[in-house]
Image (cartoon, rainbow, N blue to C red; front, side, top):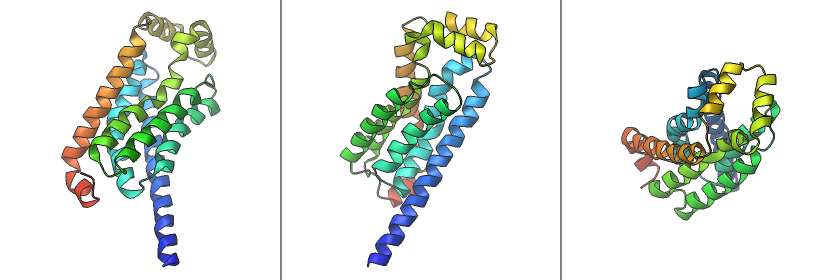
Length: 198
């Protein structure tokens, strides 16, 4: 009995690691595509929210639990710090991860509705990397220039980001998350049902 339990735990840990890695790969690929273009840069959280939704829902079928959600939310913020970004990203990623865990747990990780709602909050985890555009504006653009981005890129981002763009981006990200979840349900409904996700 203990051996079976240990085997199941090991499989769950491996599955969690795999899907967290897939999420990070999705994040890095979309980031690499978006970063050089100012408009795409501002669409990055929305795109990640949509395309990562199938990974998130599948992760919860294979490795339901708080650890996989929390780590997937927080690790990108640590990646940002490691690559020289302004180190406030965890201030957003940690609470986003914790709230996402609580919401998914409300449905015992088996409710598609609560998992989808959880993902809308989880998807805000990337905003720690964008928040400095508004709250540390001059410092952000100085660091961005020093990091190798062009003045044209910085000027375009600056012109496209009056204060009201932040809540618009957050709402758009949550809507893209929901669209991604609906797409996931349509495409992977048999797999979700087999896993007991209703």
